[in-house]
Amino acid sequence: MIYFDVIIIGGGAAGLMAAARSGSKGNSVLLIDHAEKIGEKIRISGGGRCNFTNLHTSPAHFISTNPHFCKSALSRYTPKDFLTLIEKHHIAYHDKGRGQLFCDDKATQIVDMLLNECKDSNVTFWTGTSVDGIDRTDDGHFQTNTKRGSVGCRSLVIATGGLSIPKIGATGFGYKIANQFGHQVVPTRPGLVPLTFTDETSKLCAELTGLSVDPAIVSTGKTKFEEALLFTHRGLSGPSILQISSYWRETESIAVNLVPDLTAFDWLKEKRKSDPKKMLRTVIEDVLPNRLANALATLSGHDGQMANLPDKKLAAVADLMNKWTLVPAGTEGYRTAEVTLGGVDTTQISSKTFESQLVSGLYFIGEVLDVTGHLGGFNFQWAWASGWCCGESLATQNKDQEPEKTIRDITG
Image (cartoon, rainbow, N blue to C red; front, side, top):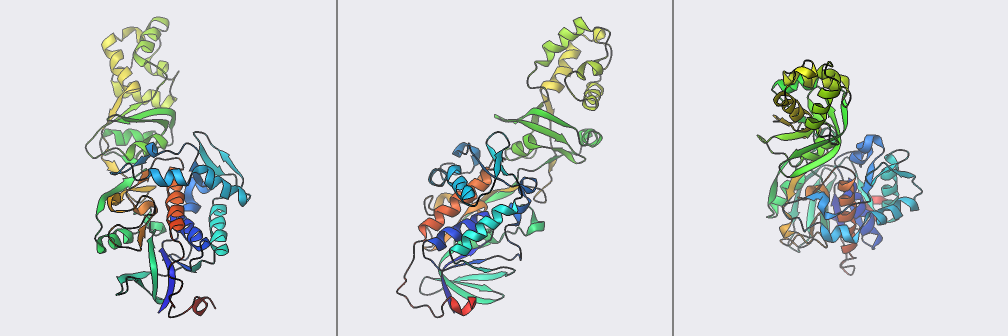
């Protein structure tokens, strides 16, 4: 059987980073991915420009049942560290606001950068190669069975991501391996995903498709986000909605403040004095897009001249503007979700090395773990940090042990 020091399953952001770093430490590394074209999630991210990190990254930007787990990796490999790599490869970038860094050109630059780093570290790639199963051998190593044959390793890294965007190859393979070796998986659900409706709100959203409000404050419970909101033919989307979707649970409501810089009730009363003959919808058009103003006036049931609207009616309209309460029916699901919430339980994973505390030599990194970032480059920073820390920990192992075949046997 052919042996490597390290086998990494998954050619996404975390897997590529771990491969490059591990190889740079002198390990022989094989990266396996079932797709012919790796790094696809990087390529499509950020509208094709890749929001590759966020300058303001902190543990507060991550969701996990074990919130302390991410702290070590995020402190050891920071956005500045990734920027050093970006600048080494002369990739131009810009801050789009809120610390969100994007490529000036194409996201493929990030993929090419990582592939070049892997090449410099002598990483071997098996792409378009499905993994049929993994076994633990008597000597404590791992045997990975693929359509290209079986290959062994001393350290096995699972970097297979989550369930989001199945059309580009997302599967639950990593969770299956975790369960196989005794690890628990925190129940998964779509994150950073548009919300859908089945009531009258659905019709309203469809009528307003393409209209955006920026900024809007969207909240559920004590959690809130102030970013743009977008009406779609299925419901609501935009950054504020994607953010809140990671916290929203079925049957719960969300509150939407369409005019966060305005105390709508006081403003409407002033307008009643200054513009008593104006229609309500016309007044609302001063602060919201025309179509939305008309829709809110109609929805309130109080559209009429301002002079004829008592405080009680103005208060109802103000609630629609400052505290529009909606109950989503669900989300668009993994089909459009940017990330997967939940994943491999981190309580039995080392936060420093990402090695399993149950099975020596087994590692989990990136989105497959129960660590999910907010929108804005945080999930990529988690991939870089977890991949780098894992790769850093994989120092050359057992070099005095003679493998059954050398790397030359497969690379030619």
